[in-house]
Structure formats: structure tokens, C-alpha cells
Length: 550
Image (cartoon, rainbow, N blue to C red; front, side):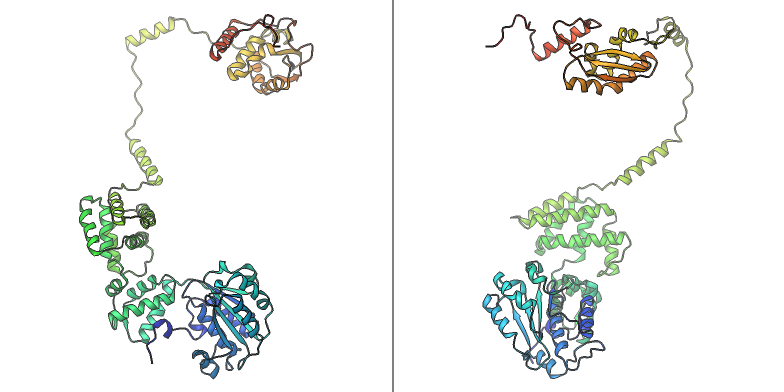
């Protein structure tokens, strides 16, 4: 018999042999036991995770006369129906490659043939692989048959790109998502194959092969086939690294050691070693990221799979001076360099410049470390600090203090004078310029209150202030100043006020014939007017001497 690769020789034949997809196989077995199997199923997932194998096992279980529906619902694999399917001569199970049969004519032929009754089995089963390759017209032609097929037909669709399958198709099928496999699921299966084939293999080597499988059991079996062809009957870690092109740990440890110790002087020799090996710099960066991630796990005392104790010890020795945050930063830098080096015309130069830069990086200081250092310095400085002794007054100082006592003290604003009687409106009007001046220090916009706001009525604690400037804007501006004005009034007059705003009237609105305000403009107002004129380049115009524009 011709040689078969391991992926075909060890293809699963029972649901229990499917690796890592228990959530799917158990659902299908229960559906078979309860006679609740859907007429159309969609298997999705990455390559090499068991989609087609599960479809073939299901096809045998549906038509196998010896299937134990009261038990495990597994096909017997010994009857004529099962053997015919193994030998690709079963007429009731039709496998169709949608990549090469993707036209409307192919789907129309399928729609016509599926109406024919099965030849020997109970059901006619169509397995359509890579169904996302069907054209849009073919999908549309398939809709009616997929939704209401004959009672003796079961459709099993398989795809690696479910997003390319129209929603109208996905809504008519029962979907099963196959998951990528983990190395801890692939490695035991590879060990079972080696044991069955009488091959000796190191567990670390099998774990390395499982990692290189990238979630695909078929890829891992292909790599095992390649390694065993080179190694014979004994698979070691060194052989697996050489065949798979994985860089040795010593090379990665040396890179880590150079970065940790800031040994820029030894970088040229290390780069020459990489060039002599013909290293692919993208592979090297990926290996460094994995190495540093494992080093983080080792520093955090987390379990590491696929590395021996001696390799972990060498890893810890190389990265002794690197903290976890330093390693995280290096991983990010390596990832960024890996993305950019793919489009570089000179990957070697780009890698060498970046690697030399990495050896000059300072250690990462976290905020927690900085706060701890500040706290430590404060704690160490606390015992050294002692209260300073009271200064001794010398004769000169006493003399200066005496002179200061004889000097006139600066005048401070005096509090509001004591009133002999109740507060009256005339008192408020008299002190109104003083009140507005104090308010202007808090809010410069209140300077207009000297002439634009008129205290009009006072009763008890209620003070009515009328806005003498027409317009809603001026009235709102006055009301906005009331909170600050209340504080100033209480400070200067000694009692709290309740302020009431009165809108301007024709009588109170300023005009050319109006009586002068309560208080004439002071020299400070004239200075403010002059400064505004000088700042904005204005000129004073007498409206009586300016002719009206024609």
C-alpha cells in the first residue's frame, strides 16, 4: 500500500477521536440520540481543526445500520456502508468542492439530484466544502432547496470564512464554530501517534511542534511527519529546532543579556553571528517576543510549558537585571519593529539600528516605584529634621523693632462705621460710588454700575436697583452681578440685603437732557476713558458737530 502522511493516516474515525471540539461532538451525538438532527449544518473554523472529519463521521453515523442511538451514537466503521465511505464509493454521501463547483449550473444540478431517493442508506448527505466560494447567484439559487429540502437530504456546509457566507444562508442552517486548538491539546495527540508508531520523542520537542502548528492539528501532524523523516526513530529538542528553523535558546539569551547589561560594545559581534547564520529577522523578533513573554512568566512564578528547567534557569540568569515592565516594553518594541521590517528594503540595517538602541535604554520606573522612593526619602529625612531654636534678639534687631514701632502704621480699610440709627436710602446713594468701586475689584464689568445702576427704593432689607441703561443685555448683566453685590453691601454697610432688579423706564433711561447722575464721574473714569481711546486708536467725536451721512 502507498505511504500515507500522518494527517490522513490518523484522521479521526469516531466522534471521540475529534481533538478539542467536545462542545460540537456532544451536541451532534445528543441530536442523533434524540432524533433532532437539523437538515442543514454549517461548520466554521480555521484550517485543520476537524470540520471535514466531523462531517464524514456524521455521515457514517446517520447511515450506519449498526449505530447505537441509545448509547454513544458512534458509527461502527465495520459495516458495508462505513467501509464504502472509507473507500470513497458510497453513493449516498456526496462531497462537493465549492471552489471548483461555484456556478449557478452546479447548484441547479445539485437541486435536481437531491430530489432522488438514497440508494442504500437512510439519508442522502451532501458535504459542501469551502462553501463561501460559491458565487452570489449560486447562493441565491440554493436558498429554496436549503430552506425546504426533501426529507431524505442533509446538507453539511464547511467554511473557513463564515463572514463571506450570506446572512440568508446562515439563517437557514445550524451553525457550529470549531475552535483553534491549544498546544496542550495537540501535544498529547502527537505523543499518542509517536507511541503507536514506536517513535521515541522528548515531550519538549512535541510541545514545540504543537506550538508551531498554530492551532491546527493537521499542520502539527505535518510538522511531526517532517521531523521524524529527518530524525529517524528519535525526536529530540535540538533536532526539532533545527528542522523547524527555530532559533536556539542561547542566541535569544545572549540578546537578552546584552540589553539587560547595556553591553553596546559586544553588539557588533552578536550581529555578525546573526548574519553568519542567515537569520530571518522577522522570525528572530517573533522568537524574542515569545522568549521575553516566558521570562515574564518565570519572574512572576507562573507555569511555563515547552521549556526545560535548565532553559528556564538560563533565561532567568540572562534577564536578572530586567524588570517585568522592562520586558513588556521590549515586547512592544519588538512587535512594532516586526510590523515595520516587513516593508523595509534593508531589514538587516533596520534591525541592527533598533537592537543597538535597545541596549542603551534605561530601566522603566513605574509611578509606584517613584512614590516609594519619595516616601523613603521623606522617612529618612524626618529624624534628621529638628525644630530650630528660637532666634536670639540682638541689640541691632531690637533697635530695628523699636524703629518699626515708632514708624507710622499703614492705614487699613476701616470697617463700616457704627450707625446711630436705621439705614436709609440716602446713605446708600451717598456711598454708592464706594460700593461699586469695591465691587469692580471683584468683577471689572461692574464699573458701569456707578452711573448705570440707581438705588431707587429701600425697605427693611430689600433694596430695589433700577437699570438706567436700556436693553435686555444691560439688565441681565446687572442681575448677574447681584450675588457679588450682596456680599459687598454686607461688608460695607453691615447688614444682609435682598436685591430686587427693576427694568429701565423711559424716565430712568439716559438721554441728552437727563439730569446728571447722583455722583459725577471721577478722575479715574476719565483715566479709564483715555486709556481705552489710546489702546484702540479711537478719537472723540462731538455728535453735534458731525454731519449726518447722506
